[in-house]
Length: 406
Ligand SMILES: Cc1cc2nc3c(=O)[nH]c(=O)nc-3n(C[C@H](O)[C@H](O)[C@H](O)COP(=O)(O)OP(=O)(O)OC[C@H]3O[C@@H](n4cnc5c(N)ncnc54)[C@H](O)[C@@H]3O)c2cc1C
Image (tube, rainbow, N blue to C red):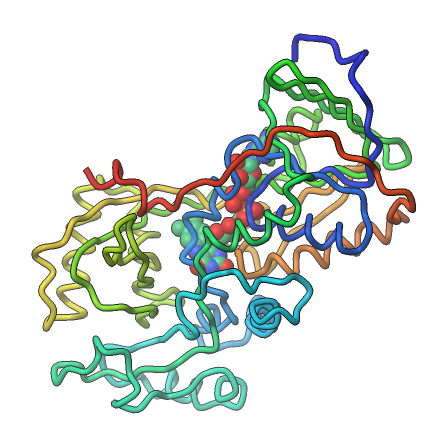
């Protein structure tokens, strides 16, 4: 930052959050509801990180339990669908009634009879409460075909439209969500939990100095640069890349994982609409993980072969195809694998946070609230009058950006 902010107005806050993805926005809502004086700073558009690339599945842990064993990750996410459903019907901790629900349930299908180990797993007491075997008549339409010989399970996992999720979380707090000119227009300093962190902002000729009891870094991949700007190298981050595939055309509506040979679904399909409402299949799972080293045409070819293999009765010849390369940003794990749950840790007045999954944002906000309580950071009794500051706006969904299809 070049210009001095000595003369800039100073605002004293409890918490300043960096990052307007689902994690930062959820936390801002929680903090403000509990009386904290908090603002959120966004370097780009709201939702522009991983959030808009998410398939929108509110996982309940079943995808993670596909190995047939119950892991800590399975337990951590088990409560999430219920907690989100309360919010979606307006009775939860945040009112998400304006969020568009794409589907009430996610499905899981196998291409042929399940192995006895997997069949036993689905019949177990734990899984019986969270999955339902679906009879032929109740299956998604795409499986109403004589060539389909597998089994279909219904999972208690709603699927959300992430654009309306971001907007619904952000709109009630517009006054406290500010655009920043990162890195040129931002200088931050935090060294000691007993002293206020300082952030100097400069944007379009306006200047502002913020003091905060805690900084929360919820900037996804951007956390690494924020930590570096604060002179830190920990906690370390890992990036796990994906190459997702999009197919557009006359496609049936489907939200489902296909069981594969590994612990990860062979493919995960969600259905969205392009800007003209045309159906788009968004394809993830093992296909996206294994597709990272492939060229875009190579990845599309593999996706076409997978779909032809899984749905030999459907015609995919008239579709338009595109790929999306995107990194997942998480707390670094010794084995480089997906973290078991959320990550939040405090050091010298700075809380670094990664939700690991969109679905775990409520759990992440619990952890951050607990860190504030542990640090005796209580809500300031006197409300702060927030100045007018530019709002960052909303990122479009990738499949609605026409240029990606050409
Ligand atoms: C392809 C894909 C599919 C997924 N599908 C699912 C799913 O179906 N269900 C699920 O639960 N999870 C899913 N996930 C995971 C989920 O998307 C992420 O866990 C979640 O969106 C992370 O949210 P976040 O707010 O931490 O980070 P992000 O969404 O990455 O947001 C970070 C924000 O910080 C901003 N930022 C960056 N640097 C700075 C800075 N210096 N200052 C201020 N702001 C900054 C960015 O612009 C961005 O807006 C998926 C992820 C991917 C990649």
